[in-house]
Image (cartoon, rainbow, N blue to C red; front, side):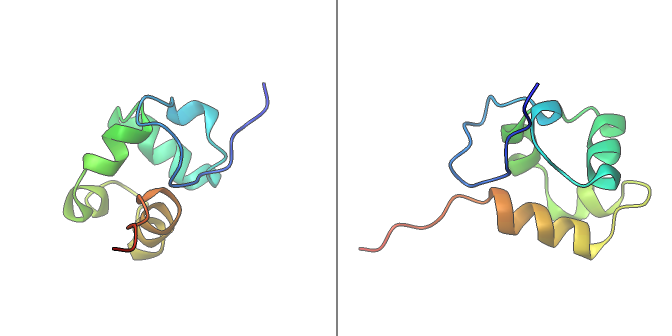
Length: 73
């Protein structure tokens, strides 16, 4: 299986197991039961920070790579 790069264009239904996240992030998401990119996008920063071995750098990585880009007016 070829892993997908984490990008804002990934559909919400994309399984997190198919996305190329750093091992620490992937393990934390799996342990928290976050199975899709959409679930990760909907999870608050505070909830992510409460996961074991998950810090601000991990949250920043997820937000930078998965957050939908705002379209210009």
